[in-house]
Image (cartoon, rainbow, N blue to C red):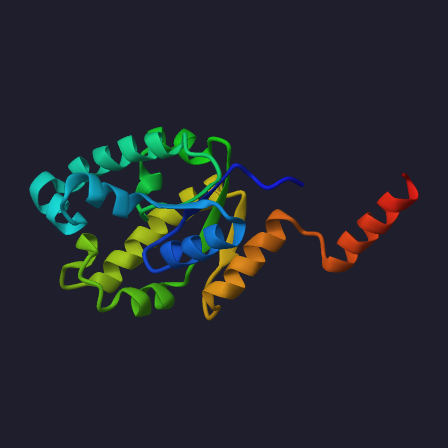
Length: 188
């Protein structure tokens, strides 16, 4: 099976989309794209500031425009923001010439990984755990419906998750690859 033109990572905050995406892109020789970082670069401001000034809806409009633009970039791994799936208009941009990988993390893992992160505006309140729980309940069915591959990330190193994604994209084992090469020689 040939590798997909694009790999799009979706999932909640703290699932490891940026870290895993960067390593996966390096492994494949693809471009790594992080929609949140690219929005920040384009605006010259961080996401909390955009949320403060434009509200979540303003940010989501910027996000949709960025996803549309990034859908045209070939040979890439795209790490999306956790809420990118919430607008149905984004779904075609996420799926376009892509394999969508849902990096699924438990609520405990999300809490652990986001506890000290001040760059997550939706969690800057008195009940970040409650917010994460509500977001998961709302978004998990959407992540699942969009996903071609679901990969659990709890208690796994990014390197292991990357290896597992690569195995799912190209499930041949080394033994199978040797067999294919050997069989190929017999047919020459």
